[in-house]
Length: 372
Image 1 (cartoon, rainbow, N blue to C red):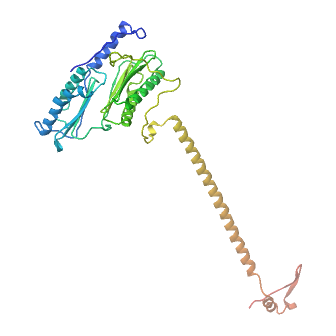
Image 2: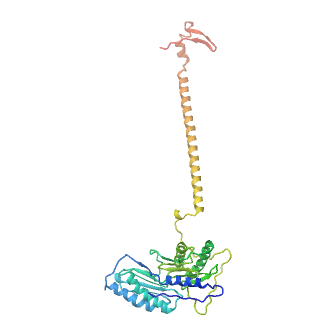
Image 3: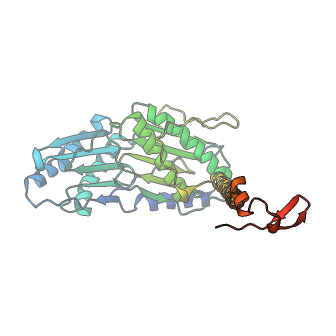
């Protein structure tokens, strides 16, 4: 398994000490000889010496290594028909020399068969320099979202203002994402000056759209900030893109070009490509959203309580009115039962006979009545 290490002479602006330089070389060597990052799908296996196996060997051992450099460091091809059809692609870092790109893809093509024996779908990143991928389904011109990314983190923590460091790193990556997603090669490198320069590299497979490239890189940046935030370096390797940063220049500058630091307007970061909306996640709710949610809950509870009280008061009022009406109706019925016409009273008192007279009251004579 090959590994590539490039040591750059220090400049007057960035001249590390001998100990610092030695530690950086050790870190780079450790990263360089790290095990490949591979994904081996469980969606089927092929038989040895089968048609699928023959087609796969034709692509991996012949077409990809021999064609990658002459096709702009990205190459895809298919072999076979029907269920034996194999789709394969290879991607090299755009800054690598041609011979290192071909060598990397050749190594990856052999390693992927050893790492994922007889798998009908697999991918492998070698030394973070090249990607080889194959499948029994169409994998071209589309951003892969079903396969998880790999995170490789620098073991050294950043010593300094971590909050400002993370903000500067965020702005650097956002600018590189904008450049890469809108460019024909889907590749960008650059750095910004901090207490130490921060160097970044982003790249997509050039067959995906500008929008998908921006989405893939933004997702990779978010994952990198989660797994390598506050560290001196880290990278995210996915099937469709790569996001990488370090505190030393790990990418290669073409001869005759100058790598000037990126400049951002004060208080303004670069504009990011649009990202599709996603449903809010309660687990990732911000403090502001939590405060708003609490206010809404309090308002709803207060209104519900007020409505309940008003309903109870109205019900009591109506109940009392109905009760009072029933009592008034009873009194009216009693009064109505005491009303008699004159002819009935005349008969009951024997025509107001003195024999039936009981006495004299404030309202006149009082008679005894007899109803038959």
